[in-house]
Length: 338
Image (tube, rainbow, N blue to C red; front, side, top):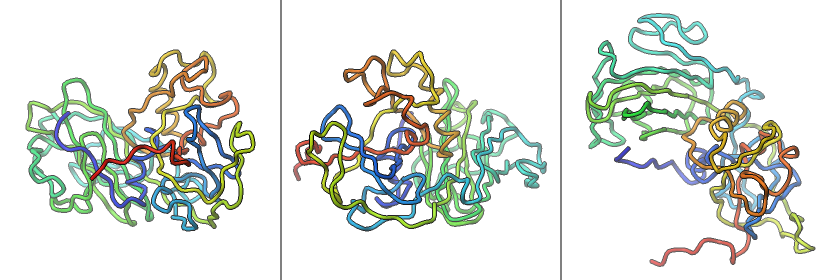
């Protein structure tokens, strides 16, 4: 793929911070627990009361502010339904919605579909979009109408067949000037309740058309009190050198770890059984994103993705939402000089 890299919204939005977590959107903080990775000085810092997951903590830097964060999608009235299929024109699709001709309608999440932009019955009406007006999207497109039930985080990700080049666009109205986000593989945005459109369009004309799979997800924020940890927090094997809270530091991308729902034999390479882990994480968290991060390296363990302990003690949902934070100056990345 070529052309644009994705950028998120503001630094405190879930859409931005999903790029600062692991490739499965891993940003889960657990009450009263801090783990330290084998890299030294890199800790998973915790405690956000009544929040089942965390997508936004980087900008608030744990100094007493706390954003509303995406929840499981279950406690807030969402569901974890996967739906797929290709409707006929004007057909009923996904939870009984009557679709307008030429569209595919989405009302439950995670929604999955397979399609082929080389299908000559598809329209080719949108050739460029306001969020990247110079990008040639003159090939045929597939349009998904998405009904968002509440304020939250909407995302879509595509996987292309070999030789195919399609892009994904998120629109607030069925108009190329209403583009909220776009990307080579995914698009995401914080949205309010209403109707949105996800458009999978062929880059550069018909030569790049072909088959793809798309996932569309929506996560509503959790609701509840959020408290910042204060005092002294012990770390794994810290020999009394506890972490003083509140702590500040950049949140960094981290690799995947094997969980208690993934039995042995454990991975022997950094990509062994990784696709199954991606699918498992998405099904449990409900977060749709373009995933590329591999298993954590050996780092003294006997298998990839070992982390700091036995996978039998690591819940899948926790792994799906954790972040690592550099907590001391010696372990922070060097800043580029101006």
